[in-house]
Image (cartoon, rainbow, N blue to C red; front, side, top):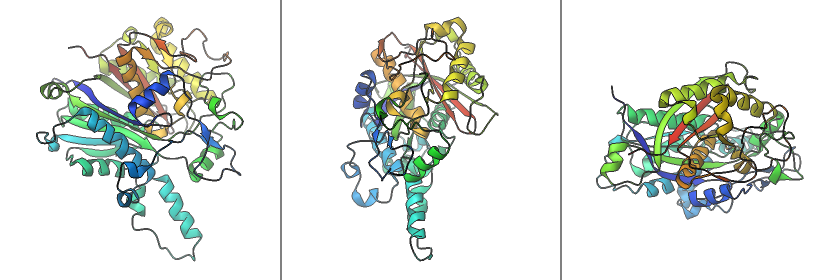
Length: 417
């Protein structure tokens, strides 16, 4: 069976450093940090008092007030980012076969804020289980994809992937495969997360996963730096329109790039810690290259998972050297989490968008907040520290690794006519 080619024809982003794709990209290449004191709740008794929140966002500018109240923030973010992506794709809805358009969305946690609020309301009451009738449909992790399909009438394949921080990358890989296998012509894919909540911050603090650099939030996310001490929690959404190549050409779509391949693997090691030698990370990148039919030396850049945790950054760096060999030193490596924080299930989507824009503009965004080399990380690798670098980018890979040992990697490349 001949696999069909898949291209990207629309992008949408709602992030801690920009509420549109253009704003997001401008912040990335200028090294803007989205970290700031939390505004959603009182952090007096919390170890970490900052996060990368979405800023200057009024949901009623995009969604009817009554409808918005029936959505958790993670679903609101999904709708807003997807609206930008669908408009960017410029479909003719009169001729679009909606039976051949699907939605595969990713979220690691789903409606955490809704769950938290309902439980708090119950415990503060008289013990009578009086819950909001929208409690369950607001909370469940699959509902964002449902809202997207209902809004646009897309009747193709529709489901949600949940693999912690790899969720939206898994969603993109599934969407890619559904198109190239002929099950759909167009797929809306990506991910959203809104875990900057009492429960989210408290839970990650209890794991000692978050940075506690409360005196200097903007430099708290410092991937590959010797003094990194945890990730910064972020929120938002990224949405991509994937489309079969001939379908896109036939309707005169603007094409950003081609999706080359996707890889998946498991660490099979620990529920939260990466394999110390990066075995899962090594395997997922090799699987991605194999799926794309490319060699390591074909790759120009890798957007690392790079969360700014002590163990994770070391393991991923080792894996890159093992996969790419001497070519590793020719790569531009970067971690955009240094600016956006870690968007958990939405990380893969917004980071893949940054890879696509790196191809379009010939610029690799920086890894900001680097001050001191870590002797456990090869300093000869080019991590694109502190300043964006111009480069003719033709092939980029994006890594995402999730709790449970879930690893996913997607590869995008400049379109070859």
